Amino acid sequence: MFLFEEQNRSIVLNRSVSHHIAAGTLGILAGLFHLSVRPPQRLYKGLRMGNIETVLSSSIAAVFFAAFVVAGTMWYGSATTPIELFGPTRYQWDQGYFQQEIYRRVSAGLAENQSLSEAWSKIPEKLAFYDYIGNNPAKGGLFRAGSMDNGDGIAVGWLGHPVFRDKEGRELFVRRMPTFFETFPVVLVDGDGIVRADVPFRRAESKYSVEQVGVTVEFYGGELNGVSYSDPATVKKYARRDAFSSYPLRTWLPSVYRGHDSNKGRNDWPRYLHVSPLRMKLRIEAFLATHGAREGSWKLYMDDKGSWYHNPLRTPTISFVPSSTLSA
Image (cartoon, rainbow, N blue to C red; front, side, top):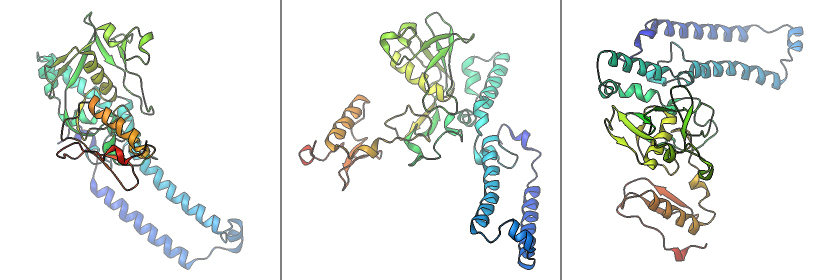
């Protein structure tokens, strides 16, 4: 059973079923009424029932009502939208609902004289996964196209709870990304809310960079339990992930651009590869080399329109169409 089952004990499935039966019966009776009863002439003219625009607009209003009900249940939640079936709601991310529950469990474990590692190791992966911005229904793309695994990737494991500290030993907390932000700066604050470190946009003007402050990260629980990192590049990588969730996830299907918003974020680079195939080929080669793509992990191929795409499936070698066949 899931952790929060108690709050849903008021659910009686028979009530939902009987409600649907009653609503359907009422709809049938209303349909028979409209078939057998005609409106008086004054009402017919007053409501302009002869206009197709009036008929269509009134029908749309009825459908909109149902749409708003469905949208409301996704944003606010309801007794008939269990979290294990529909996932978390938007306001559970905004209010840190699962984060508070996780901290409550950890605090209870520490009160029982457990170590930080033991307390965090007892957090269920499911609960950690719920506290992830990619599960926020308000993130993602109402007007975006493409598969959902082009953003952060598909989560396959919980890395653990990262704890950041500066060289003076202060514990730092990464400011989480709000719901309606596409990008968000990486800012680390102390327990009093004072900014102590960040990932600067311009290094020449940085005062609180990870390198200058000497930030380190240590993991408790999860797959990296007890592992610590002091390398600035690694620390910044986990700080960026921490803005999406306090519980970083190991993902499958690596994406070219992880810094968007969530696993529903779009990765539009394949759409523009037709502009200059050779130039994009060189860029992709440089990307693979920079990110340490292993031999046999990627393959690039050209379609009939001359566009380059990536194939995340495992293939024997990294192969390219000869450059001589392409125009710069």
